[in-house]
Image 1 (cartoon, rainbow over the protein chains, first blue to last red):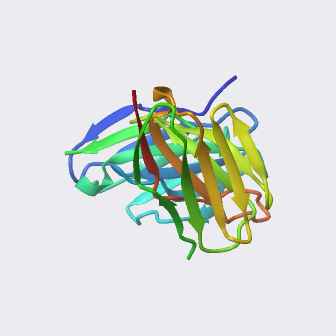
Image 2: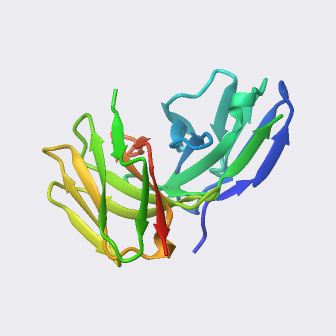
Length: 111
Length: 115
């Protein structure tokens, strides 16, 4: 069965640079979620989209933005990167009212 | 603000032993999940608990939910080395008209099974 696909798997950026993470949801899933998991931490909800509209917002810094496109894939844009942004970033997708499935994550390292 | 607490944070146990991980949450919710995470890997869904008194079992793992006590447990029976991982509970507080989730995760329990 198709899973949630994230790219890239690993990303190394310098401080103050910009990063873009991509998420391709499971086909026919109309909702996408982004989570951030710092080292040794639990995942924190960042933002979600339903049918290309932002549906909820969590602890997402103002330096980050995200959108969902017409083909339902989503991108998380992160600017002015800080060392503290180093984390695993998970995307998840779901159909309406169903449990989400998580992607394999993108490991971002800011140096 | 919803708070989800797990205990213990770290658990080291011998193969063949039984143990329980506890998950407490601070406000009413009707949907609780348990996930497994191996180091650097994704979150694997183990159980979804939807109602008070719900009990689900898969192999050596059994999860239960008491919504009145705002408590869920994950019980490990006769542990084997392959169960070594971090286990998270997560509470879904958001069931808006959009039908989307908003998961708040517990602190996680790092389980190490010693042969």
